[in-house]
Each structure stands twice: as structure tokens, then as C-alpha cells.
Image (cartoon, rainbow, N blue to C red):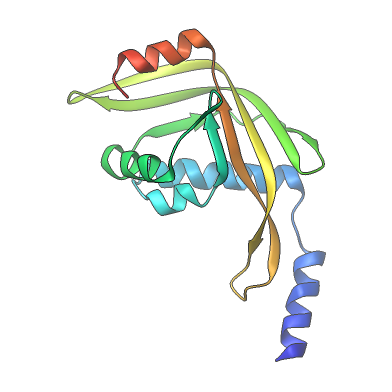
Length: 151
């Protein structure tokens, strides 16, 4: 049993994807889970310190919103700037929201996504690095557009 854990630990070290690939995977998985209304799968990609425009939000609120509304968020992936365990990516995005029985699509010209590398665990309970979204920042005009929709 100890040999199996040791072999798995070494395999995790040897076959870990590059950070930019791990960030892209996390973002893609969170987008897909959001569209499907799976809050747990979205929340697993958010840091405990997740903020939107420096405003902390409770995971319960995000989870409930995802479950009820299935927001369709698509970020045009660009190469993140990675410095140690912190990464930033600025990219355009589109957001489809269901508001008052109508679908509205918003194009966000620039969204800043901040990521932190945190410790996760694989299926055997061994530590693996996971990039989690720690912050989303948009311009004040973009934020006011979303606030006007009641979302």
C-alpha cells in the first residue's frame, strides 16, 4: 500500500501539467459546470477568498445562483501572467443571463481574472496543485450594466 502511494505521488510530480494548462482546464471546467447548473463543480474552482470587484461573496449565494439560472459564461482564454502561485489573465468574455424570462447576452470587452495556486488532493488523497479563481474584476460601467439587470 505504501509503495502504491509512493508511486502515485511520484507520478503526480512527474506528470503535472504546466500552470497555464491547469488554469485553462480549471476555467473551462467551471464554465461548463455553470452552463449545466452544477454549483459544486463551479465552487470547487473558486478560492475561499473569491471576490468580484473586491467584494466578497458567499459560496452559498453563488451556488444557489448557478443551480437556478445556469449562467453561460465564456471567457476568451488568453495566456495568463504567472508569478509563483499567483496568475492574472485579462480577456474579453460573453455572459448570457436569464432575466425575467428573457435571455440577455452581454459582451464584456475586458475582464480581469485572478488565480491562486492552492493545494488540492487527487482521488487517492495525495496533494496536487490546483489553480482556483480568486477574483473577477470588471469596469464600473460593466458592473453597473449587470446591476441594472438585477443579477
